[in-house]
View 1 (cartoon, rainbow, N blue to C red):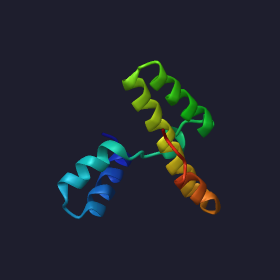
View 2: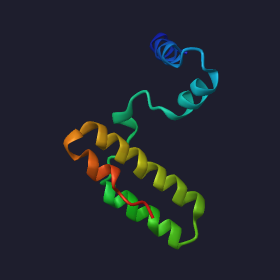
View 3: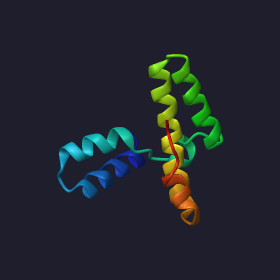
View 4: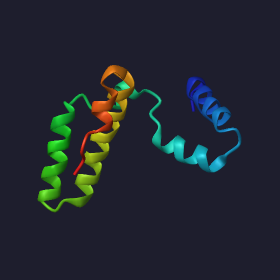
Length: 93
């Protein structure tokens, strides 16, 4: 584990204030570099791909693709506060 990586882990532990269950969940789900981790695809395309997977009965693939779309929507909502309601009201069906 590199020095920079350790600093990030310590920061997360500090924010969790000793709540090990919260830390375990967040350590597995948060991106250290969201800009690099979030899909560059348009949100509409990500949702379409997820819907196609559902129609083709590819459940695991659909879950993964909806996850990518949800991550993108959350990220975009935080980056574009003026459009936040649009991202909150997206329908993932």
